[in-house]
Length: 119
Image 1: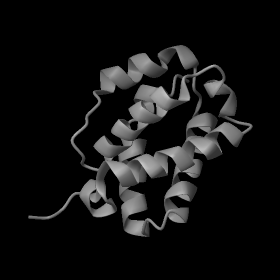
Image 2: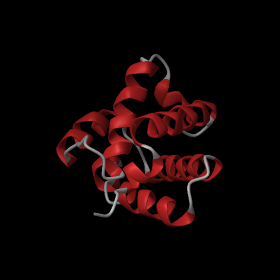
Image 3: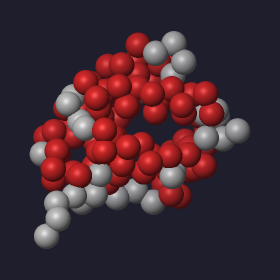
């Protein structure tokens, strides 16, 4: 049986480390950092760890409707979404994630663009 990318990377522990590093970078971004002012970051990291795990074939899952509801009030635009993609790719690369796995994650994330971007 073939392992999912989630399993190949080491499961929730590895994904959690990636997500924590990702948010350190996101918070420093002039383009998207302000979205997280006043946010409970431990809770956000927990949710995002589950979301990224689901993108990698892990046991967690989020519906497209959940993604839409979670982001609709934020008025996220294409530039902001692209910034998140760029930060995610850089984080994955710096964490030693290979190009094939990074491409897989980016493609899965891109599939959800229309549920996150408002305009």
